[in-house]
Length: 178
Image (tube, rainbow, N blue to C red):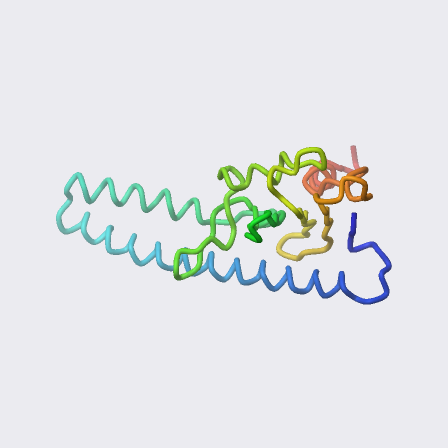
């Protein structure tokens, strides 16, 4: 296991952390663009309801309202990890789907089938993955990464791996006055 706490002396982890932060920042930018596009379409739908007030226009308005609500990120990180598969495909797994202008996935929803190996992969059955990276974030800031080489069953990347999700839950449940 390689973490941001490792002392490699070569700055590789710092470079990885900075690169991943840039990627996550870009994902937030794309999410903002998705929100803006949805707002434009919703405004047109609202006008159609005022002008025509048809059932179809009201249904479209309702769906667009649901979409706007789904695009809001409230607390917690947008993305909590990355997986690289045997075909050299790389997927960022997060709380919601984010796509670029060409509709290519920037972040895949944690419930999507492509995300399943993020949770299920282990050294005995890597589920087609060669690498998994977990993120630990403080809001939108990436503070640590935890790497697992799933092609090395004898490596030290599988035992005692801190789970950023559990760490975040513990941090949020800690109350010093309790």
